[in-house]
Structures are given as C-alpha cells and as structure tokens.
Amino acid sequence: METTTREIKRIGVLTSGGDAPGMNAAVRAVVRTAIYKGIEVYGIRRGWHGLITNDVIRMNNDDVSHIINRGGTVLFTARSDDFRTKEGRKKAYDTCKFLGLDGIVAIGGDGTFAGCMALSSEYPISVVGIPATIDNDIGCTHYSIGYDTAANTAIDAIDKLRDTMASHERCSVIEVMGHRAGNLAMYVGIATGATAVLVPEEDYDFEKHVASKIRQAKLGGRTHYMIIVAEGAKRNTDGSLDNETVGNGSAGEQVADALRKEMGLDPRVTVLGHIQRGGSPSARDRVTATRMGYFAVMAILEGKTNIVIIHDHGQITTMDMTEALAMKNELNADEVEVLEAMTASPLDHF
Ligand code: F6P
Image 1 (cartoon, rainbow, N blue to C red):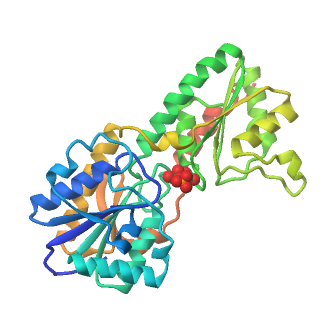
Image 2 (cartoon, helix red, strand yellow):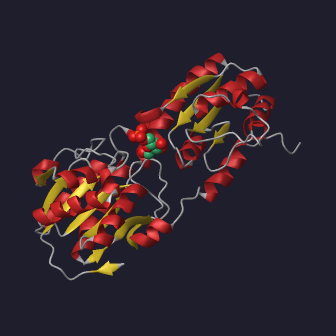
Image 3 (tube, rainbow, N blue to C red):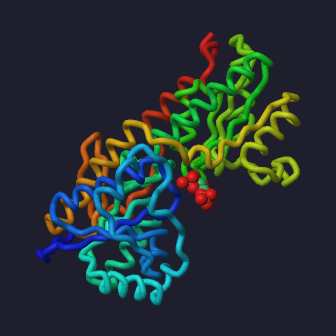
C-alpha cells in the first residue's frame, strides 16, 4: 500500500461494471464524508467512459438525498473498451488534471479495480476501490455490496416458485446469475432448501449431482424438486457426450433437457436474470456500503492509495490493490460442506 502526503482538495467517484443494489448508498457515503471533511466531489458518470469524455457533475449533499434506498446507480455504469487502451487512459487522466482531482473512488468489481491499477500505474492519481457486485466473487473481500439484496430477491422468487411446484408435484430448474462464480447459487440454494445446486467452479456430472439427488429425495418422500443452476454451470461431458445430448440453451435449459431425456421428468425453467441486480438494497447492503464509502474517503485523507476497501470477517479494512487483484475467488468451504449435507439423502446410511 502506498501513502502520499499530498493535500486532498477534490475527489471523483464512479460506478463501473454490473450494477449492484447499494452502489447508491456507497456514492452517498463518499459524497457526504468528503463534504464533511471539506473536500469537493465530482460524480463521474458511466464509469471510466465518463472520465474519458469528461462526463462529470459536481455533487453536494442534496444530490445524494433519498438515494440510499434506491437500487441501480444514479451515476450510471458502463464497461469501457476505450479505457483498456493507453490513449483512453491518457484522456481519462487529462480529465483528472483538468478537474484537479486528487483521488478517485471506484465502486465495482475486479474489472473496475484492474482499471484503477492501470490508471494509477501510469499516472500520479490516488485510487481506492469499493467492492460491489451481486456475484460476491471478489477474492480479496468476504463481502461485496449487493450480494445480500440479490440473494434475498432470488430467495423470494424461489419461495414463490416452490408453492406452485409443490402443488403440481413438479421439478423446477431455477437459473440464477453467476457467470464465473457460484457463490450466489450456493447461498440461495442453502437458503431455499434446494434439491441440488450447480456452480461454474466444477463441471457437473448429471447422474451424480442431479439425477441421484432427485432419486434420493423421491425415496425420502419428496414430490417436487428444486434445482438451482448458476448461469455459468457446465456439464462434464468426459468427451463422451455430443452437443445434442448436452443441448444448446442456457445452463438451466440444458439441465431441464437432461431431466426430460434422461429422467422422463417434465421440469419448468425459470431464469431469474437481471431482476437479481435491481431493487431497494437490504439493510446489510445499505450499512456496508455506507461504512465502505466512509472508509474510502478517510483512507484517501490518510494518504493511502492503490487500495481496496474490504470486508474481513465483519471488519471494514483496506488491502493493497495489487495484492487484492492477485487473490482468487473461492467458494466458501463451510457453505460447500453444509450444502453437501443438506442435499444428501437421509436414507444414505440405512
Ligand atoms: O453483476 C454480475 C453479473 O450479474 C454476472 O453474474 C453476469 O454474468 C453478468 O453480470 C451479466 O452482466 P451484463 O448482462 O450486464 O453483461
């Protein structure tokens, strides 16, 4: 972690990558803390793209009134290809110089932090990252803003689905977000009492991870089954299954196809999709975002730079950004173990 003794007069705040409920609460906390400490704040709109195009607004306390409860991000968000180029970052730094920014607080995921690193390694600008993604897949932090709200949104939908699936004694396949990470799928699977959960981290064996769990559940007296599938989950084909067997649809559709063809079931597929990214943030997300936003500004004032604000076993603290980016996301081992026990058959040992 680097420190600088430069006086901090003006900072920028942006949101980048996929939005997450609680981003607004973080923006609000950054603005309010900065003003409280006598620092001016510019909101940079549409992520790094806004820094390249000087799409900025001066933000005062009033500008962040009544946003703590709103999903999405009032600053808009975008993924910028231009910022991946040296020319793009040069333009972005020109905007920082033009505005007199001493630091930038960037709210987003790993991609956002990689952008921070690229900029600060080329130019003398302080960067601080705040983790926000419903995937909760940032290796350096135990918690990312938006995860709790997204999980509760999914749980609410799945509980409703269960009512109708139970009534019709059906099998339900629910696809949740998570292209590269199964944290959300697993968490939601534990919370809803799923029959099986499929994640991107391990290619699933249809017989072992789905069919046998359904058969065991049936032996145990169940008449409906809930299969939670992360959108990035893939079937292990062992090179022996052709494309037609695996199917071409989404991860959820593929599981449903196999349930039809290989088990003779009549499943219904629900893709929860972007609904999981919206909605009013939960208390946990509002409070975590507010603590992180406050901490980010205080860290800048203490002269810290190139850091990520992290959640470490309930404590909000900082980590060097290079170190943070090198940390790989892993599924929570305790949750994996618990889920295994919860989806195993009670008849296994008899
Ligand atoms: O926010 C994270 C995430 O939801 C991933 O799980 C998903 O793969 C991705 O965003 C999709 O984002 P978009 O539709 O905005 O490209």
